Image: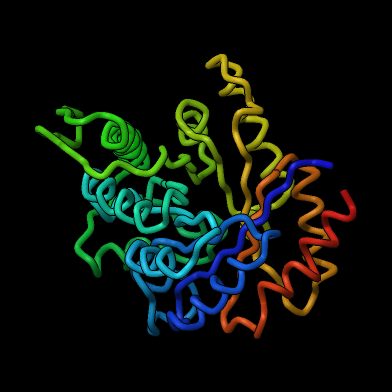
Length: 300
């Protein structure tokens, strides 16, 4: 049997904390679910522009305190919202609360992009979101360079007693970060551009990409092959990288969900994050296990 792991994602958009907590506490009791995830946006990126949305890292800390087993993280942290060293301190604190269960999910964040990019119809939602919170939009190249510096800073914060950092975009003097994480958090990088995949091959432990309906199977397979090519160029065994994909669950079509998940596994993805739409049905985590995860595993 292939070594397949499943996670659950609760997007904190137009949903109450108590509803998210209900899903996470239930999932924490189900060993078939390995991890749980949030996202990192400050305004809704789809549907009506109004409605509540909860900040990701604050919410993650609260959920870390209420769970005991689940690995946890953000799919993915925007590198544009927090300064790298501040993010490193936040992440270290969450890992301390979680007792070493953090997975460090990172992405470039909002950059200048044309409309209809990334499977989201319409204007680039980052433009309104970042303008509302006073965050500058940068070019994709600058965003990726900043992400690479952030990764280097995080690695130093989690391993060195004190250090200076002098990069193109960030400068630190005498950084000290205590307590360190319980263990080095695995690094997950989300994205699909060629330069992002190169960074994945260089630095990441896990690679994540949105699956259908945002990205089709052919595109996912092509991007996975491109990642293999980057690994070959760097002399890295591609089997060292966990390939992770997100898929939005259809509560009304469990058979269709199972079929798509099996297709994703067939394309080489071994970490399947089942993303839930709000409102969440009662006992939805148990429903996932009984109607998706267990039947899929029985087919492998």
